[in-house]
Amino acid sequence: MRFLLVLFLFSFAIPDDISVDIIIKNGKILDGTGNSWYYADIAIKDGKIVRIGKFKNLKAAQEIDASGMFVSPGFIDVHTHIEGDENANPLASNFIYDGVTSVVTGNCGSSSVDLNRYFSKLDSVKLSINVASLIGHNNVRKAVLGTANREPTGEELTRMKALVEEAMKAGAVGFSTGLIYIPGTYAKTGEVVALAKVASQYNGVYASHIRDEADSVAFAINEAIQVGREANMPVEISHFKLSGQQNWGRSDETLGLVKQARNEGLDVTIDQYPYTASSTSLSTLLPDRVLSDGQDSINARLQRPEVRQQISEYMIKKLRRRKLKHFSYPVVASFKADTSYNGKSIEQVNLMKGRKHKAKDEAETIMDMMQQGGAGMVFHGMSEDDVKNIMRYPFDMFASDASIRVFNSGVPHPRGYGTNARVLAKYVRDEKVISLEEAIRRMTSLPAQKFNLKDRGLLKEGFAADILIFNDKEVQDLSTFDKPHQYTQGFKYVLVNGKVCVDNGVQNTVRNGRTLKSNTF
Image (cartoon, rainbow, N blue to C red; front, side, top):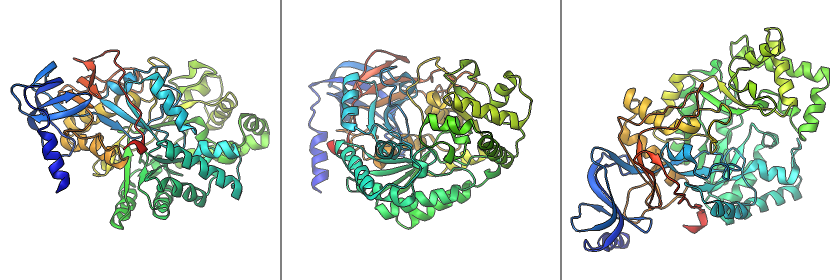
């Protein structure tokens, strides 16, 4: 009752005869709750939404006419990797043009360990987007154990716990793992639980790139749920998918595990990108045991003929399980040693090198590339039917799993440019897999609720003015696998903390993003 009274008083705190910064008029309001749209105006002052309704005499420094368009909260991308990209393009244009006003970084176990320093850097650089961060297990483990393939000692685990606690106190929104990556893959479940419990004490979320997304995916999902259960914390399973042709059609099974956990009272949610290809490191094709102790150790192992033979047999066996004859599904996104490989499959690269058109030779090409520092890859190998089935699940969010893109650098996955627009254009407008209202809820209030971003994700008086204005018939992703460096079109206006940064479809130089720290709410 007291809360309602406060809201009632606040809604009348701005009289009609004073001036505000911006009024958005005549728009169809999609407030982020999943409810149907309605007509209203929105008044913004000092970075906040101060009035929603119809007001005749309110004066504004700027008016935006949203006639015929939808007005929604800015999108929250819960799974990104922007560390190290901030200076390259602080405008974060690939996110802004796709309607993203806030991101959660530090996913897949990869983050800055010193989040106080990282947040200070963000405040100094001043991005166009808001940024929250998880604390990543891989970097915490690396800070204490390096990339050693062993369990931590009691003293080492204590040091790792201290790093997690320090990050949570600095404002991390949770703890992330990347259990297919080095050195996270060497960690047993007990280690993960012990560290997750520290984050749980600060109301953190456990976000996991699970241990396997292919043949052993059910085991991996259950492990993530186990961590949440034992650490008593919410779970977010990242980029929920089924990799490899042999696993197509298993989405009812994997979704069933999530539904069962929720029925048991566990707060488990998922996110996905709306594509049938993933993107990660070339190193994921090799056995984990080969990748420990740094690049020099990797190179030393790959120089031994008997090890190369074992790795080749391992990779070819996995290829056969995919029912493929060639390594046609991994495509090079970025290879620093030779950029002519970018955009070509391993099969094509192998032929470029003049080798025989055989899987064994392609495996040799993969190992050669690993000796040259590895590569970023795009892996084609998911089912469109599974993508749609997962998308229909109501507690599934949309996430790019992307960095801040540098325009025309490499041949990256198109998800870094067009994730949200692709959902709205292909899966909402054209194929009607989910409704517009539901898609907006999954992009706004659901992620804000999950990651405790308490003044984001809704068009509501008192909330931050992160706002989009768009024509749902014009929104379109243009980025493709062949030509990824193309910005989304159709978001006419994008506001971040009350400042316009996309004006009539064109981004300006405004950078009004903020760090979103859990301990500031």
